Image (cartoon, rainbow, N blue to C red; front, top):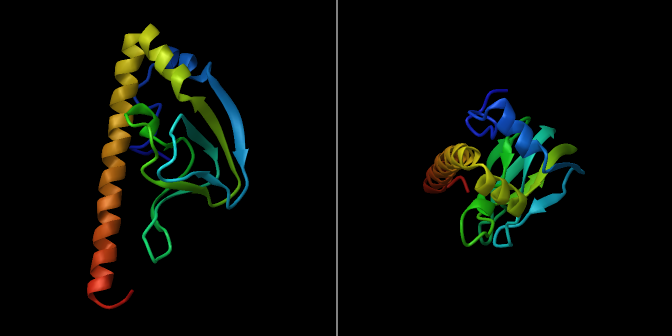
Length: 151
C-alpha cells in the first residue's frame, strides 16, 4: 500500500537504516489502546502488519474514527511538536506488529544528522497535513449526518 502517511517516503536508504537503528519491535492485541488523547507523546510507531484506528473522543458519543492505518504508516506525530501531547487516540483494530521509536532517541539522531532531521520533519509535516484533512472530512461527514437527523 502506498500512502501519503508513510514515514520512510523521501528518506535515503542510509537515513532509513539510521532511523531503524533506534527502533524496537512491538505488538498489540486487537482492542489495545496504543495511546490516549491528552496523554504525553514520547514515542511513535510504524505499522508492520495489522490495522490501527485513529479516533477522536466526542463527548456523549462513541469515539469517531478519523482514519485507519496499515502497513508502513506512521502512528503518532505529536511527539515531534510541543506540547508533546496526543491530539487523537489510537486503537489496534486487529493484531498489530509495529516498530516503536523513542522520540528523544530520534530527535537526537536528527541533531547528529541535520539532513535526516529535515527529511523527517518534512515527512511528519506531510503526515500531519494529511491527518488534518482526514479529520476535517470526518467532521464534515458527521455534521452532514447530524443535520439530516441521522445521528
